Image (tube, helix red, strand yellow):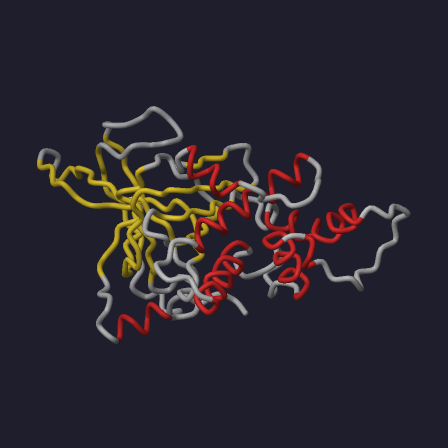
Amino acid sequence: MPFRASGSDRTDARFFSRPVEGLQDHESDISHNTHLKVVLRVKGCQIEKIGAMKLLLLYRSNIKRCYLSKETRRQYTVDLVAWPTTARARKAISKVRMAYRYFTDRISTINSTSRRRKTEVFYRTLTFNRTADGSDPLLDWGIMFSVIINGPSNFPSPFPWHGTSTDENERVMVYIEPFVNAIFRLAALPHILGISEFGSLYMYSGGRLWKEDLEGYGVFVILGCNTPLLLESYRVTASRNGDVETLLPCHTVVGVAYVHDYMYGRALEELDDGLFTTRILDIV
């Protein structure tokens, strides 16, 4: 089913132009110059502040950023790959398993119920909870994910094998290959899986994060937008009457965000309960 993170009323959104100064342009070296910018003024609420990420895995990119210490990385990569694979598959599997183990360990009390819940959140976030064409994840994907996380012992024995090799490891790799390929190709734009130092899990699509300390980044639900958005906040100066400058907040869209439990209207329910408040956001 299509995402519907907020209501469909877009009447509060409107475009206007204004001159802004000091808006850093990541794609060029232009900054501290006055430009006429088109601004989309919307109503929305911030559901999560993004602090310092401890782990970032970027998909469909040759960039991998992991801010864990060498000792911690070693801890989470020991015996991660339980069977011989190709170098490419081993790298992909190691990324997923290291992130999974780090994420599931970010809870004070680990029991079967909490681990099962964290596993479901990780799996659904990893896949953006859908296939590339927007439909629900395939049922086999869950089994393939289990094989990746827990090793070949979870490999389904009835799996049809049309090859001539009797090597069990090769059969396992052929079985999980569709899922491994899918999670690295779910979108034409980069998918970024991040785990905050507080243990929150996020998936972004469509943009790049530029720094380790993500202070100033936040996940927002915009009224009338079907998905949460990752926004970066700025303070800029706006010229008024040619000589008066006022410090104003504005935001730029980094990408679409997947936040489990917030894709189908939870933010609207929490707005009604008074847990969030809407505010005016100027998106440049």
